[in-house]
Length: 344
Image 1 (cartoon, rainbow, N blue to C red):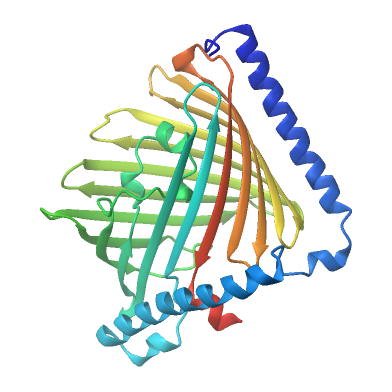
Image 2: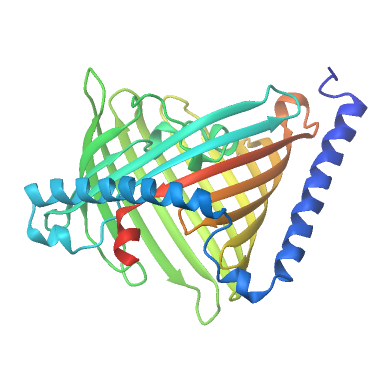
């Protein structure tokens, strides 16, 4: 096995990522040359697979939809059958190929059960991976949190959320929530979130702020602030800059995260994102813990609920003297949501 900082290792890592970036770019060029009729198709799967997958999807999505609405109707009103409900179940299978560490595979499950009419603007929320349980910013950056690695339910929470429901473009939209983790002994939590969206003068740029203050009995206090500045270059291209700071009582370090993104919609079913990311910590004496470059190609391969991601990245972590190391993340994701059935 090659040493982490050997010349051969560096060359192979850079060469591999460059090859994958060229491959991804060639995929985009090829996609742009596709006949427009392909863009209107809804699946890449063969007929025999569609015949087996669609009934299962309809059954599971129907269960997600009916379960949330039936519970909502029991505690709330008949409006539960009409209002939009954002409950979902997302299952993913991830394959992570890494240069300097062992390869990894993981099955992820994320879910969120929302009961919007329990009381006026009071919602019962059940979610598998609250933001506060995802670790430090460096740990979050090391993997895409969309995967939602399931920990046996130890991180799941249940609680009530009071949301003001204000238009973020004209006023602050605040929400308060509290509840417990789904484990024994009970682990109570409280959370306050505030969001705002501004149009920067007459320019096409928008600025969004998302702040959160939380307290978990087992972990203590945490605070997070996120600023998202972006603009559409045209209907298919979007430029975005995301800055985030976070403090957690158990870690007791101020962390920062900066991402620059260039997003491109290839067609109705494919998109690609190029990003450069910096992760660090400290206020008076800040230091960088990791730089990385990433290309993410995402394809909707079946009717808006089965997706494939290919994400090569090149990391420069401090722990190995900022020597480059490559990673390739391959992910299959299935998204179940009852409202999709209602829309169809």
